[in-house]
Each structure stands twice: as structure tokens, then as C-alpha cells.
Length: 346
Image 1 (cartoon, rainbow, N blue to C red):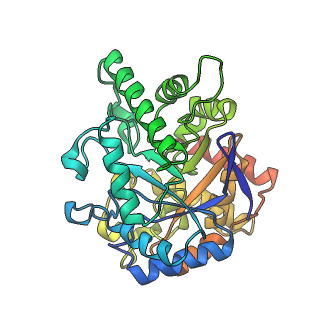
Image 2: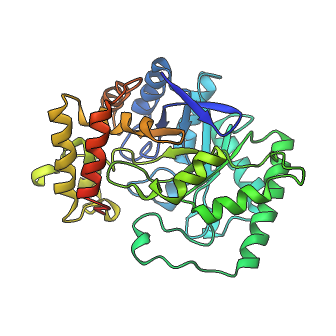
């Protein structure tokens, strides 16, 4: 499997294993089968979070996915590297408290215990305390909060992260659901006066990114390219929409749409025709639409790894077949034309 840069000094497989349904839609046996399958296919990283599983999110299941993952990791040490996330304001973790310098050590210790590891390879903040334009909030987004208070919190958290790196509990830091302005502040705060990278310089940004959600193609692209920040693309198949399984009113039993009809605001009147445009391109070029969607991520100007989360091992096996695939220039150009014809369908 191809590897791409992770920040300036590391690498990551072009596909990483997503885990967010483990403990709800996906039982432990299937989750462990997925881990073994991913490792055998050359996947070198998994992504999880303290608040998982989702579909639905419940206070009583907080940490369950990490625990399921940890039982496999304990029996298979060293086979895969681990990225997890610190939840913040609005989550059920720590009663919905924001991310602070004080919450970071506590959250890390909880994740270490559940994952049964000594060190977390990549520690991420799930979303900014100040809010985010992700999850369909871009239509009405307005920045909130006082600048100086925001920057003080970022500085305090950077110091806490540096202490955890020195303590050996985490190796690297990344953001999720972040903006270009936010990333610029984190990058500035974590750069030493002599211009050298500090230990907590962000190596990645985990935002939604797919053929149907190309919000990152403007200012985030420039930041990621020139600052060598890697995109960890979540929902690269747009929660399964790009497989085509929901076309024509279909709702397969056990699918995400059978649990969440609106797919978190993704299912709009414009999504089905946009999806059909990409499905037609795949048919015309003789390529599976899942493989096209995943391989397209490797055509971007920035380093990108797709977080492939599957409800079943069979779905994962199908997606993993996209590894090392290269799309023709003709198809990439046609994909851009389809994006122009169907911009921001949700």
C-alpha cells in the first residue's frame, strides 16, 4: 500500500482504518476481523476517539470503541499505530466540558487505559472549543468567542501537549474539524523563536473530505500544501452515499441511513443527482465507484489519507482494493467538471 507524508517527519498509509461504529453497528468480533484484515493489507494506522461509538452516540457507550480496539491491540502489539481524539464542549465526555490544559492529561490517561497502550501515536482534538463550520454548519457559520481568550486557551493547551510529549504519553498532535485560521494559530504557537518546529506542531487535520464535500479545496488546500499538514479525510465515501446504495430511494437494512435518515444533514434533494453524476463517471471509465472515490484523494496537491470506516469486514475488504490505484488525467478532469455541475450538494 502507498504511504504519504504525515506532517514533516512521518508517514501514513493512504488508507487508515476507521472505527466509529465499533460497539453499535459493528460487534467486537467483526471489529477485530477488520483490524487483522487492514494490517494484512498494509494499513499502518487506525483512527478512533474517546466518544465513540456513534450511530447513535450515548453517554453510556463513551469509550467503548477504544476498549474494543484495546483488547485487540493488547493481543497484537506493534501491528498498527493509533490515532485517537479528545472530545470537547458539547460531548458526553467529562460532562461536555471544553478542552483545556487541565483536561488533556485526564483524557489521555483514560484513552491509554482503554486502548491498553503506553503511548498514543497521534493525539487529536475532536473539534475546536470555539465551534466549527463542519457538519453542515458552513451555511450559517459565524465565528464566536473573544480572540484573546481563544489564543490563551490554545497557548495553554500547546504547553500541556508539549508536557505530554515529553512524558511519553503521546508522540504527535493533530486537529479535527478545524479551520485555516485555527490551524495557522496552532502552527504559530508551536513554532520556536528560531523557526524550528516545536514538539506539538500539528501534523494533521481531520476534516470531512470527499467527492461530495470539497470544502477543503480552497484555503485549507494552500495551508496543507505549504505547511506540510496532512489531511486525514473522514467520510471519504460520504457516509456510504458514493457507493450508490441509497439511489432510487433504497435504504439497505442495517445501513447508516436506516438509523439516521438524513445522514447528519447530508441527504438533500441535490445529493442524489450529484451522486448519479459520479456513478456514471465510474461506469463510463470501468471503475468501481468506491475505488474511484478513494483513489481520487491521491490526486490532491496535499498529502491525504482516507479514513475508511466499514460496518462489516466485507465492506472493508471491498474498499481496501482501492490501494495503489491511479486515476487517469481524463477521469480526474471529468470529476472536476462534475464538481462544477454539482457544487456543495450538502
